[in-house]
Image (cartoon, rainbow, N blue to C red; front, side):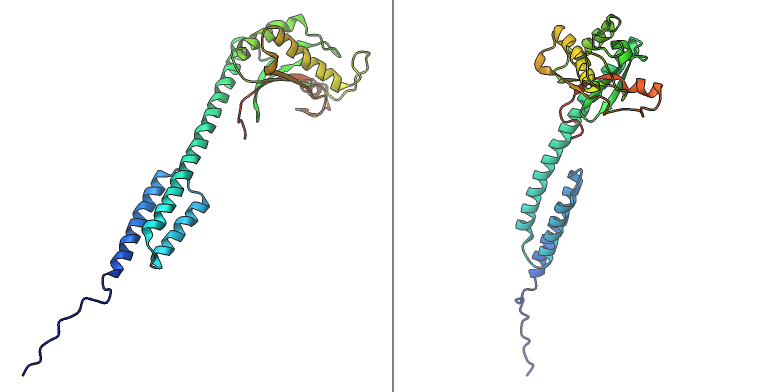
Length: 243
């Protein structure tokens, strides 16, 4: 008599691998979506995703793991985008001010007495001391008033803080008014500040610094270089610049 074949049992977990496979496919899909949506991915986030892969391959549930990873990734991405947006905003403000000062100098042919320069705190309008002051003095010369007034037209429209910086060369001075280059440079910076305050710029937007000979832009080894170091800088501060 022929022996009856026993029916094959489907028990034994033959379909369990499908759960792991489905988790891994979901993880892969969401990973690439995340990669596409994020402009940058830092090392910590990449490590978190890699650990999620390892956990799934080890048999743990990928849905919960990846849900947490995805949530953290989107949160960090949002923060990064906010920082980028703020940085772009600061750059835009800086570029607008720089362009306005550059246009002012070009339109009024002030290249011989003024320059616009970059600074990690904002935009600098650099004025040569020969247009502003006589040697060893801190009284503003009448010939410089039109130049200061043109600059006023730009800075008066801005809400930014303005810092006036006085600079000298390293030649010691000896007169009855100023005992050293520090005091002379400070008096010159204050004279420019006081002029702009008299024009209506609020005092809480203005400050000044006497730098003496300690921030040269050229070696103090020739008359030409020393004349470059004798200057007054008008710094228009841009919030967040270089931070």
